[in-house]
Amino acid sequence: MKQLGMGAAGLTAAGTLFAPRAGAENKPSPPNILFIFSDQQRWDTLGCYGENMGRALGLSPNLDAMASEGVLFSHAFTAHCGPTRACLQTGLYATQTGCWQNGIPLPPDAVTLPRLLKPAGYEVGYIGKGHLASGGGAKHDYRDAPVPPDGRGGYDDFWLASDVLEFTSHSYDGHMFDKDMNKVPFPKDRHRVDALTDFAMDYLHTRDGKRPFFLFLSYVEPHHQNDHDHFEGPRGSKEKYKNFPVPGDLEGAKGDWQTELPDYLGCCASLDSAVGRLRAELIRLKREDNTLVIYTSDHACHFLTRNGEYKRACQDNAIHVPLVVNGPGFRGGKVADDLVSLMDLPPTIVSAGGVKPPEAMRGRALQSLMDGSARDWQDDVFVQISESQTGRAVRTSRWKYSVRAPGGSAASSDSYNEDFLYDLEKDPHERNNLVRDPTLAGIRAELRERLKRRMRHAGESEPGILPAKGA
Image (cartoon, rainbow, N blue to C red; front, top):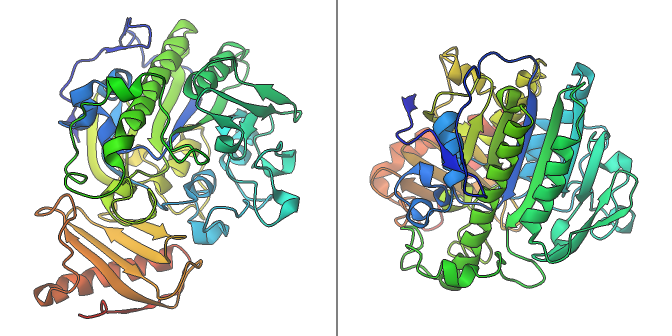
């Protein structure tokens, strides 16, 4: 654990400074919890991660400030390049929830975060993109219809969402549905990030304070707009960010990053402004001292450089996500270099609410990294990959090892072939696949056993793993 080398104040969307308040540790208990979730955001869009395009373009003053006051997790990774949302709501891997690809509804009786926190006295609320109710035929098609109460995963105190928000909205128009299944239009000519933030601001300043709240705020951005097949930032993004520095993983690679990155970056800047607005509102309401704010994304984005879409790949530009946490138990401007997974967030959230994580949860509460009690923290992370393939990957601090099943996409397989091996110390942008290198047979054997162990931990049967074809 080290200190983050940057200033302790940042800029809100209005350009005013905010800084940690004195007496922040004199707080009531339990804390409010605000979970801010972006979609398809790369870690290097945040300047607090170092010399990257986020810092060069000044994209993230508010998240940088949040990191300088809280904790920046430098090596955070998604658990699945598709339905990560089911993993986050349950603390289970996708193959355990049954939601191993998009279009499979979360089981209505799933033990979810709101169902664990509400009995502990929390008011539970959800705003934005749900993506956990549609699937399985016309009976469960809520892509442009309100999600009924039994499809909301236990968020039954406050609900303002669309199951597939990119189907009910675009960058400057759209609607969601409230708890009573009424259509709620976006304010006229308001960018989608700003509209969702407006609703979240209303939520914050209308709480009566009698109960702590857990609000899950789920944005679409910077995900591309499906029906337009483009990223859509706030107006002016194309011009404002046209002179972007090219990340090393994209430099010289094919894909659509040359044309799509400016709008993508505009979305990321808009999300950062949203964080500034929300944190400023917590300060105005005198609730910032006792609110745990978590910011992360479901997966990253490789801009068609690894396959025919934007994610569902083993490389870091698909799985490395931003993770910044600030609030009770997560303060001091620290940088945690440990390998962490989004699977570690569900036990972190319920632990913050005073609830013991169920034994079924596969991750570990991040509080143990903060208080030094984690003597045996994981030295690898596990990723399930579906839809583009049936794949599995394990990442250590140095190595990336991935396997792929023959045939198409399925929940799991009894047999895989080795697919990728990268030496991340020598090849951080993952350009040189070493999976057929005969001198690394021992490394592959060690990683193969790590991967099998991880698969068993996720409830999968131990498969056979064969050498890469042609090896």
